[in-house]
Image (cartoon, rainbow, N blue to C red; front, side):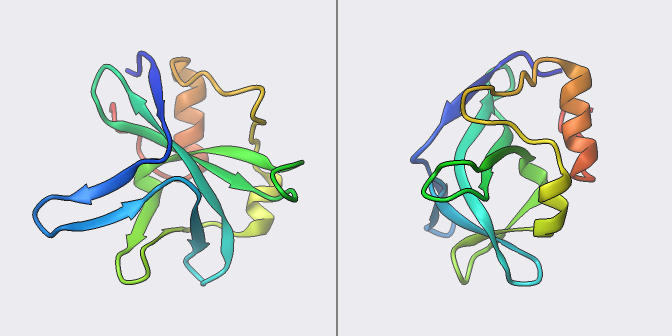
Length: 129
C-alpha cells in the first residue's frame, strides 16, 4: 500500500550503467503519435518503498494558468532516450475528459481506492499489487 508521497522537482534521472540522464522538471511529454501533450512537473516518491508513485503531468492552460494536473503512474510513461523525452499513450481529447486536479488541491494517493482508480484510468497495474 502507499503510505505517503514526497514531491521531487527539478530532478534528473540517471542511468549509472550507461551514463545517460533525463531531467524531469518541465520535460515535454509526447503522445505515442508524436503530439506535445504537456509537461512533467514533479515526481512523487512513495516514502515507504522509495519508488516513484506517479509523475505530475500538466496539461492545457496558458502560461501556467487554467491548466489541469494529472497523477500519471510512472509505469504509464516510457522514455524516448534518443530525443530525451517522455512518451505516454493518451490523446488530448482523453485528457480533456479525465479527472485531474489543480495546484491548490492535490490528490491523496494514500487513499487506496483513489490511488487504484488513478492507475486504472491509465490502464496500468499499481506497483504495490
